[in-house]
Image (cartoon, rainbow, N blue to C red):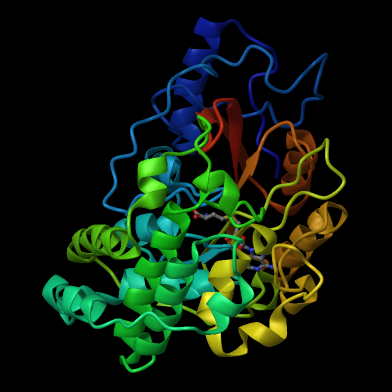
Length: 402
Ligand SMILES: C[S@@+](CC[C@H](N)C(=O)[O-])C[C@H]1O[C@@H](n2cnc3c(N)ncnc32)[C@H](O)[C@@H]1O
């Protein structure tokens, strides 16, 4: 059954009142920032977004114990908003598919959901296991510092393969030495240290990415607008210890266990969940192919698969990226709608919450229509946010289908 909503486009004040009314029906936010679409009505004129009340409202504060991150597409800054929206949804089990940093799993467990985390990449899966394992209680900061002091830089796969690409020769040799020493640690400790190493690698990179072979940029003396030289030039050990401190803080505040499943494609998950949160890669309208997560973070995936890294690399690539067919990442914008349909059909009866960005591809309207076909009740909210590494405001949308 479609739910009918007020049938006219309204002025700001009226709309605020209607949102307040809607809140009593669908338990939306009291802040008036969401605007449920008038279900059953046609989009008119420039339609979506017209007369919305507060697109320029500043970001909600992100009060969270979750470690800081500049991961592309992370929802860490949106957690206050998501917290309000999830609060209206009933159920016990939740899947955080396309989990990335694990920021949303962290929120879901805090709200009391029995949460399962999924991501297609091994480095994200290791990071999530480290974040939700509580391993800092078994491996103190003192032990970490002792471990770091014991590392002997050495010639290895990284120093031989990535000379002059991302890090200096000394840094590459330090990483090789670190990867050799890590092998001797037991699983949960190894994953905790690896998570800290991943974060250190990201912090030392211009743009926090591995999409360009641009060590020379890091080493140049020209003024830069996209990062901070002193952060890039801090040692791995300094960044690793700083990350450990954040993880330790987060561990102390975890209320409920999070199950982290093996790295794999979200579409292949068969287990039933009351709620499935999906946050797939988004695709830019203007570009034929949006840069993939593998292109952005291949170096971290390589660290996570250190022993097999050599066999995964495209030898012709200047960045020494991992070959794309290796992963089941969603990379094709033309497939996104079909992939979503597939997930909805596979998990009939589950409630779905989806994050996406407005004004890209598919459009807000296309996604909204797809939800309307698949669910009895659909709610769409939007907020403006600034992204990491961008001064531009973008509109994030959240669709809830139940
Ligand atoms: C927008 S990000 C998710 C961000 C995450 N919600 C967070 O707060 O950090 C999209 C994620 O989807 C993952 N991904 C891409 N294709 C996937 C697939 N087929 N199955 C599972 N995860 C996938 C990427 O690795 C990336 O971490």
